[in-house]
Length: 351
Image (cartoon, rainbow, N blue to C red; front, side):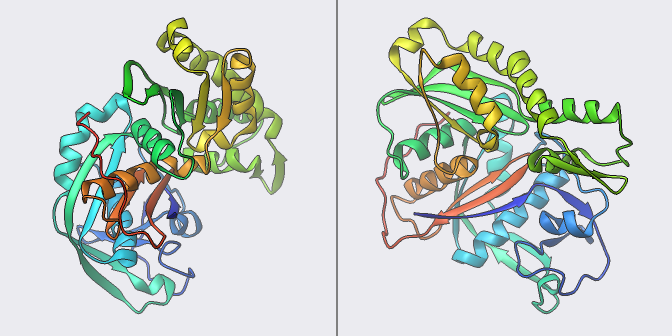
């Protein structure tokens, strides 16, 4: 139903000539901004020295701008112009940033990029036209995808979006969300920072950035001083501590006994749902209360919900609908990939 394009949310300044260093655009993203070149995503990880990104950055910050341009460039290459965009922010920053982000996106963009990185010639620029924008809370995007995407989840359910910068959750009913149950707290970054502190007790981390530590966290191994170190058991311990210190208390505060009488189902989304240890922690707490499951392709769920929302904004037309999730760990672009031309049109209310 969807095609998704994913790249790490990292950037680094780079004005060197990079030719034929990647197989395609998504792995060879190099964007020019105010005359300076920046490598982005996988190219920043391979050609950069200190790839980075601010956590929960504002729409006017450099890293958000570069990741936005990269997402728009990829969408334009797949769909052409104009594009209808839905994106989102955590509940904790949504009200603060939604108008600024919508105004920033709802414009014609001239994107200056280097095609030489993937054998596409030389420096080029394209114009990306936008004909509609909506900014919604991330966890609402997850709920839309669960109800209107491939899973077609009905009834009442809890949804937890386990992101890198922020963990979000709420109770979703067929009549809408229960606003009182919405929660927003520290994401997996908390566990990654715990792991970094544990490693630093024994090893010299060679000035590795937070995102480089996160890559090691994901893989369960890290290379230090030419040694391959298995960190899976240490990672699992940090995940459990994160759940006990942050996740469980936040849910106890947000969800009460009456909420559990309304629903017996919880779905986990976001990149954190890919960690078996974290899922196990949820199962241990709710085994006698809820049926727990991991959503299909949990990492891209919010982006797919955004894409569905964009098609609804278009009156049901899918051809230029884009879901753009500018996450703290990964940026994900979703577009439709089937023969249908319309979707059920029911534009969500303003949040």
